[in-house]
Length: 113
Image (tube, rainbow, N blue to C red; front, side, top):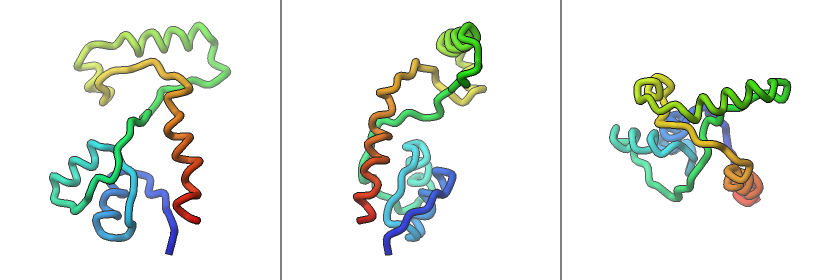
């Protein structure tokens, strides 16, 4: 049977694949490494760079505030501040950063035909 399910969290995906509920799944590399360390039977099939957790602003936010927020986030270098945010830094995003995600979405039907 061909089906997919959104499980909501990367650890749930890895555990479901390890239990045999799914043949494959996508998860963060750090989660994959942690699950392998825990003894889960998983195998890496493919790896690609991915944009994660972008910080976004609504279109109604004043341009001056958007700019100030962007400049502030990009300037954070303090390791304690970044640790508190659970980040190692911030990069400026661009629309083409999402090309690989768009391609994956477009190719999704290939797996179910």
